[in-house]
Image (tube, rainbow, N blue to C red; front, side, top):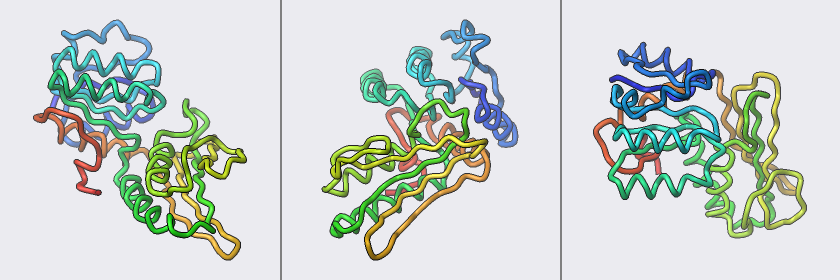
Length: 239
C-alpha cells in the first residue's frame, strides 16, 4: 500500500519503520514543517492515511482525507469533542474512518477485560474503583485517550459512577483518574478496586512503540477497501 503519514513524532517514525517492514510505501509525510503540503492532490497519491498528529490538527487532517476520498486511520487523542462530527461526516459522505484511542492489541484486550470485570463489580458497592495512567513527559493530553475509554466503559457498567474527572476529587459518584507524567514511560494503565478487606487490579504496561505502530498498520490494511466507521473491536473481533 501507499500510505500518507500525518504526524511524524515518535510514533510516526515507528509506523514508518514498521510499514516498510510490511512492504508498504510511505508516499507522503506531514509534520509541522510542511503543513502546506497537506493537499487533496498529494493525499490522492496514497491508498490510505494514518493520522498521529496533534489534538489541534487531527480534525482538519481527517476532513482533508475525506475530501481526497481516501480511508483514514486516526490514533490522535485530545480532540474527542469533535469525534461525533467525524463519524457523521463519514457516514453521510460514504467515507472510511478507523479510530482507536490505543492501537495496542494488549490494551484492547485490557478494554475487554475491563468491561467484563466492571459488570461483575457493579454488584459490589464496597469496592471503590479508580484509574491510574502513567506516560512520558512529552504527552500533550491528560488524561490519556486510553484512560478515557476505560473510564467510559466503567461508567457504562457501574451504576454508582456517573462521570469521570481528574484526581483528586470528593464526589463519590465520580470516577477518579490519576494522570502521571514521568520520564520516558511508554504507557501504563491500571484499574483498581479497593475495599476495606482487599484489592483487585488489572493493568497493561507498554514496553515500546512497536505494538502501537503494528496495530495502526493492521487497521489501515483492514480499512483499505471498506466504507464506514470502524474500531479495534471490528479488527480484533473483541466484544
